[in-house]
Amino acid sequence: MTMSLVRVEGITLDVAGCAIFRDTSFSIRQGENWAIVGPTGSGKSLLAMALAGQVPLACGSIRYDFVDAADVDSARFGWFPRGSVLRVSPDDHRRLAEGDGTYYQARWHASGSAGQDSVSDRLTRQSIFAINPFEVLARLDESESFDRRRAEAIETFGLGALLGRAVHHLSHGETKKLVLARAWIRHPRLLILDDPLAGLDVTSRDTLRAALDRLAASGVTLVIVTPRPRELPSCVNRALIVEHRRVTAACSREDLDGRSTDAGSDLAPAIGSAMGSALDPSGSRVPGNGHPPEVLVRLRDVSVRYGSVPVLSNVSFSLLRGECWALLGPNGSGKTTLLSLILADNPQAYSNDVEVFGMRRGTGESIWEIKSRIGTASPEIHAHTPKGLDALDVVLSGLTGAIHGSREPSPEDSNRAIARLREFVPQAIGRSFGELSFAEQRLVLVARAMVGSPELLLLDEPCQGLDAMSRALVAESVHSAAVTYGVSVIYVTHEIDELPPCITHLLELRSGRTVRSGPIRS
Image (cartoon, rainbow, N blue to C red; front, side, top):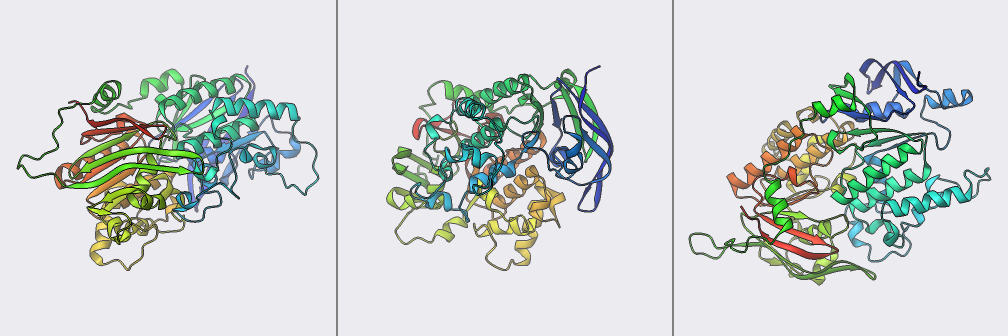
């Protein structure tokens, strides 16, 4: 019989005084790699946290057969011997992404890399193992072994060209790769990954899946949390199905694949065709009444660089009222930087020719008046939203564009915010932002973007971490806003199957340059 590695025996979790996952039992055996799958808010991440000793048990036990007897009691509280159990979650990405920045726009306001940790700095033994430089310890790892794994991680995740870059200046996807590279170097016995492919471009996802297969073959046991079973690497051969904070089934990979109904959008073939060929040159931009269309956003030959590193190079783009654009491109191509210029979060907007709602940046316009007309959701907003803030207050902050609400809401404002919460994530009413799962937080931020009846929606990977039903809800709501109220949209994603049907145009960036721009063929 195959030896067990982890035995979960009759556990019940205690989360904020609530008992969940009552009387749950399962075993992870040698040669098995597991997935934990389920819909948004089902409790997947909480179960993964329990496996890592990060959630208290009301009863039952979790036994790690590869942990020495002397360390068993400490393992109950998440204190494992170095290199044995590691969980990587969106919170790890957030902490690394924040770096020394304490405010939302810090990423854009850092003009250089002096005094900031570089990618190379975050891949040292001292950083990865959190070693106190003044503490005398036994050597944690043989230098040759550490250096070999570091080199493997740099090559696997394509970090070679980024080693000298400040972590603060990395894109969301590039930061995600750095987080995963750090986990790779630690090479734990049990590695728990919470939605590891979210935010990565297609090529990077393929690379990571292959890397995880190699990691599993080297003896690391994987547990992967995901709302999208079709993204799993081939090494995963067992799965737990989670619904309503309980395990409803344990099954084989074959049975899991048979259950998956993660269908794509009808728009995906059209976008795919547009990316593989010339865009439609006949798309008219003059309305039927003969009047010239209103330009909401115009960027002329904009360039952004940090020190000697170019992020955008001579990009021109204009969006007319009523147009809905998909903004695509690989990690680090400049997508989020382009949005930061439109929002004036990036001070380099003032050294470029950027016009929003007919007002050129730097001509005395009110930033906050413009922000109040734009609804936005992004990983940066997610990272800097205080966990203790009430979910309703997070939504209300969308009325001003500030991360924190800056005015006392009127009864009408409160009713509008409650209605948006009920539309996207009703279970968030009465709860703090930090009490919600990562995916539920994402839905709160989508509600925040749409609460003020904006003229322009800037949505940067709004569906990251969401299941198929929640992605469909977001797409339907964005489509309705565009069709019913004429809201213009710029939608950033690596998943073309999640784009709302209202998308009419495509802008594709690569290495900071425009490679495609124009109407999508119907």
